[in-house]
Structures are given as structure tokens and as C-alpha cells.
Image (cartoon, rainbow, N blue to C red; front, side, top):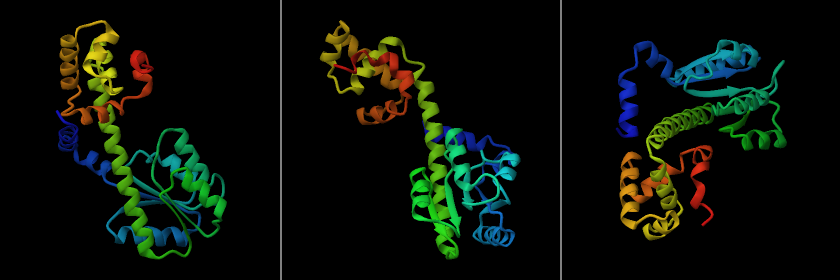
Length: 233
């Protein structure tokens, strides 16, 4: 089953409540009530679902950060700041796209936020379309990240079906070694190399050498560490 079919199958199997949970959500965090309400109205007018909070603490208590979508954060708020939340999400492995919207931005703060992966850093007042464009970009980035996560998980499952010898041979292939070179490195015949290469690529569902290399690179280094016997050759 290809990744595209896996995603399609997953979508078809979702219940109505699950589909709602998978619908993009724009989360707004700003301690200024009028600003928060105006942002929520703007986002909703563009057809996006939104939820708003007065602080990062309120957001964390709501336990909704796993929903698809993006964040619109004020930078300076009572308690934890928007930058603090960005750091927290990075540390906990949640690369949720963030749009910073603030009346107190400066160049160092902007650089810090963008280097940490923010979608944009906008200063109040901001044009409605500029903000909505950033929201659309954030939602698209989140969707892309989620697709990559599903694909990586699927590829890891395929990798785990490989035999030790298939992994050895495919490591050589990934390193650009020719069949005869891999055969010499492993002390086996070239025919045996071709057999393991064909079997391994079939299990990895690689349609071509280029396709295989792209799939192989999604496997975490920690999983491939024991397969690096050819990596220094």
C-alpha cells in the first residue's frame, strides 16, 4: 500500500468526531480581549475554525495543541510569552507553525522567532489579507509536516521488515556502491547482492533508485546506525 493510499484509507476510516478533530484549527493567544475577538472574527470570516485564549497557560490547559492548524501568538503577555511557548513546543517535539503578531516587536526578537521556525512575525496593526495569507501558509506547512510524519512512520514499518543482509546491501546502495563493490565488501556473490537488493527495494516499495534514496533518508539515523558497516568505504 502506498503512502497516498494509506492516507486515503485513514481519512475514510475516521468517525465524524475524528474528522472534526482533524479539521484545521487556528489558535489565537493574546491577552488583549478586543484584539483577540477581532482576530477570531477575521479568521472565522475566511472560513477557518478558531479558538482564542488570553494566555499560554489557558491554551496548555485546553490540551488542543495536537489539532492540525497553526498558532497566532502575541509575543509579550503576562506569564509565559509567545516566545516561551515556541521554545516549549520545540522542546516537546511539536513543530506547530506559529505566526507572531505583536505591537512590541524588535529586530533581535524577530530574528530569534524566525530562526526558531516561525511562519511570520507581524507588527500590529496588520492588514487583514497579510495575516490571512500567513494563516494559510501556516496551515499548509502543518499539513505538509503531518504528511511527512505519516510517510516516515510508514517507511520505518517497511524498514523493519528487512532482513539484516537486505539492510547491509541497501546501505551500500544508499552509499552509491555498485553491486560488484557491495559483493566484495560483504564477501558474497554479485548474484546474491542483486537478489537482496531487489527483495529489499520491493519491501521498501521503491519504484526506482532515486525513490529508494528518498525513502532511505527518512529512516532515523539511530535505526540505521548498526547498518553503517559500509558508510566509511
